[in-house]
Length: 236
Image 1 (cartoon, one colour):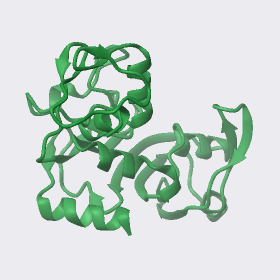
Image 2 (cartoon, rainbow, N blue to C red):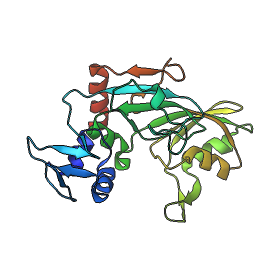
Image 3 (tube, rainbow, N blue to C red):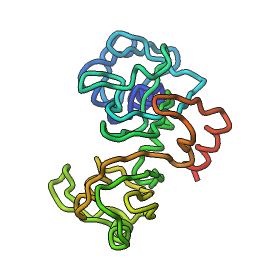
Image 4 (spheres, one colour):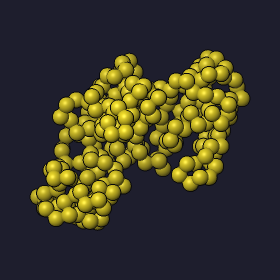
């Protein structure tokens, strides 16, 4: 198995993130610094920053209701992260992100393959949100959101039109939106381009995992049946 896949399956990070760790010289195989493309064979000793990295047969998946004010990180280096809410001793990593000002569903796992599958943009997995705005929502706004909105792609500096999506008005100041994209602060940027400011944003679903009645700051384990159903959805 290639070293970047090994680190991904072990739940350390994505394969791209693994390549960065390897290039930084932080990964060793049997005491020798790994390089891009290095292979891991059965019985090999893999370490990251001197700590052993192993692949656990039993994988875990949790649903977490992230509060407003926390960044989606297990580190506090760039702000107050969510580590305090994660069960002690469990090597879990968030699948994707919610910005600091947003709340709602985050999936946490130690299954690198599951993480990569959900984050694969080409597979167009659905994510659903409830959004609060500072202005009354009209039919023109909902129609524009559904068709796609021209926003700046910060990675390229070029204007792009977001992918068509599903959006539904709930009441004067709330709407529900289902995206298959995951651009940075996408809903806020789409709304702002149409003259609206988002004052509240909650994610309530990722693929077929729903937030349900999970309280803010609480974490819920997804059982084996739930994980199997999720795999059916993302592999379909």
